[in-house]
Length: 295
Image (cartoon, rainbow, N blue to C red; front, side, top):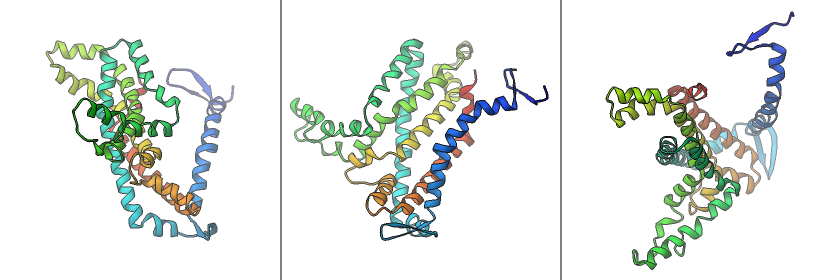
């Protein structure tokens, strides 16, 4: 056979045409539903705007007049700050959860309990977010319960429409995206390494610091990527639980909903995409996430 063949890592031989046939549908899918829409957004970000219409002429007005404006820059800083804080909070809750499911539950029970965290996603994110209002509100379940048992004399106003309610909303939505990759990383740790540390009289804390934590970093990195990206792109939590405090996603929505300013919305979307790329690049420079796919 004259067709040049390439060897996969496992030793299987595949011709170039066979590789192209296998990867072709995936490449076409990403090209049609990811790269093409992003290209359209990029093009629109360099177009003009006048009287509720897009003007087809090249301009940097959406970047110089909108993206670099004080309002957008301050809102972007707030959005990134929220994303980083939520990522840290979710990691604080997600890592112990994954650790418990991995080392204190059987493999089947751990996977089953992890799947239970997916059940809330059977409903709309808007419904899951709005559901916190009757729970955290001044006449909600928490305040009513605390008042009935005499713990507080008047409702707690800081539970709703504050950073507290936003953190709760984000945590409820994204803890599973943090815990799942960490659980996978922990599941791939060879127990012989843990036994070796114990044999060398390593304390549980030393074993965790020197063995468990370093080997679970690929899962931590992937979980942080998921959480950060989903948080700064979330629309329902800042819309319903922030009490009017906007993020960059709400500015993008307002640009389209109030005036059909597609060039401005596209420019802010490109800026948000660049922020995501920088965050992911910074993580990849520190952690090799490909280790999570190795046996």
